[in-house]
Length: 136
Image 1: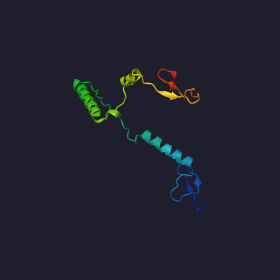
Image 2 (image 1 turned 120 degrees about the vertical axis):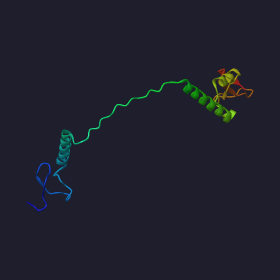
Image 3 (image 1 turned 30 degrees about the horizontal axis):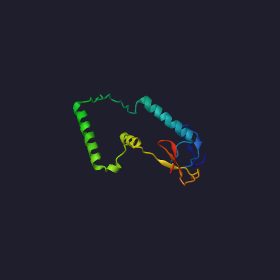
Image 4 (image 1 turned 180 degrees about the vertical axis):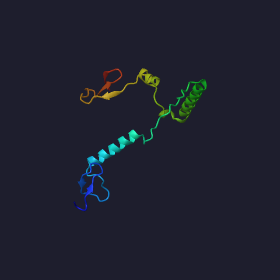
């Protein structure tokens, strides 16, 4: 027997340690098995404290008129501040604004580049609103 051999704390076999005074087991499998055995013994003996969760009552908030009023006042104040502080050109367009543009004859003319000009020099454009070909 060599002077550097130790006995495994789990299986009892002799081994030469790779780390002096740190290694207690001959292999990783013995180390894991010893850990599992210790945990199993602790659970059976009850040495580990068992934590029991206490039941707590959950308070369910009910809707009240004061809460509804506070929410309405807060929303109104926010909308007024936003309208007051935002410039007119930075405000978003509404459906009514878009409908006014369409009804007032808003049309976008797109130059058609692959049609040659007429004899009088007028170029062909496509009106996206009326969806017709126009010469200007």
